[in-house]
Length: 391
Ligand SMILES: Cc1cc2nc3c(=O)[nH]c(=O)nc-3n(C[C@H](O)[C@H](O)[C@H](O)COP(=O)(O)OP(=O)(O)OC[C@H]3O[C@@H](n4cnc5c(N)ncnc54)[C@H](O)[C@@H]3O)c2cc1C
Image 1 (cartoon, helix red, strand yellow):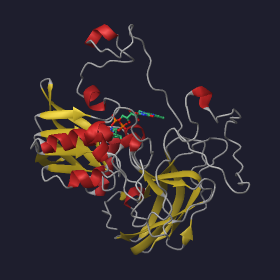
Image 2 (image 1 turned 45 degrees about the vertical axis):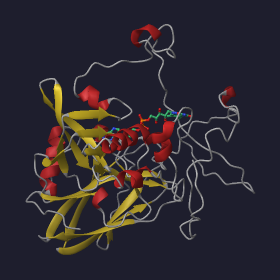
Image 3 (image 1 turned 180 degrees about the vertical axis):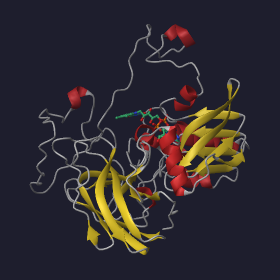
Image 4 (image 1 turned 90 degrees about the horizontal axis):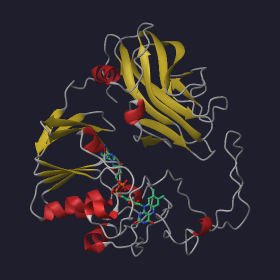
């Protein structure tokens, strides 16, 4: 891993580690907390170590800072340690009763040259590591998600201050849920040069292999074509779009800024979750498929909240009167019967929910199967069965 060694210190972003071990990359909250980060999601079983090797140009004393989050102050469920070279630091990270913050872990002497870094999960309960900073003096690293923090990170990572021009298209789609994939496919088949910019590693949004809520109800041929699944559970959308010569798909790129020309969007700026590189993409036409109208909001467009009345847009299926109804926040889960009792770890910070969720108050006609069987989970030691197709 090549990390710029600046005069002030060395910044190592967790998402740039060579080996994530059992940790996973989470880039969903960078708007709020400033960066993608590594998450140790082990359901109570500590996950395998993440590791990397950096080159330290200047031998000497370094103050070590780790940006972590104590997600349940008072209980500290997500704790981890850091080993630099042969030294495991005494500090347990994620245990300081604070939201995202840089934790000072004292001073280490580094001999220079190749130096290994290892994140060791202690709990399996969602420890979070954003970055490690090795400072040559006692100046605290810059915290937050604002432009000052981003600019500080860019400088330490050796990235340009302005996004790099990455091409002009006829149309740009932001957000690769089923709607975004369908818009991209349609545009490509109309002969447009189209770019799809999507924040996640998999297409599909709520229907992706990461979540698994397959579209139901009226689907149509385009949605059908995109939402069949490969044996690994991923939607076939990615291979369908990659087969289109005029379509470009950028995965793990989050649009964070729109460039306006008067009251029109001229370009969008997107950031690569792993490298932090920022690109600018231009088009005369943009389609907002973010699921949250983010593009429209950033462009200052008028937005609606709730359900509009039937008469507003002459929509036969809309309610007669408008209201503020909208989708709530949902924890989506599936259950299955086990052959024997399943142990459950102690979770003293959790809120006890002792209701009967077997029929969800009549929301489902056929409890347990109404949402389909969910994404396929393949045992890595097993050869996938190519005949399996699931929706
Ligand atoms: C619990 C639950 C149950 C549901 N049940 C059903 C059902 O049974 N049947 C049904 O038809 N519908 C159901 N829905 C609704 C359905 O999931 C949504 O209508 C559908 O997902 C909307 O698709 P979308 O492509 O607009 O948005 P999403 O599926 O949300 O996809 C948007 C994608 O855009 C990406 N994105 C967001 N911002 C950016 C950015 N700045 N840059 C790049 N990418 C970005 C996101 O990461 C996301 O992957 C349910 C929804 C939920 C939450």
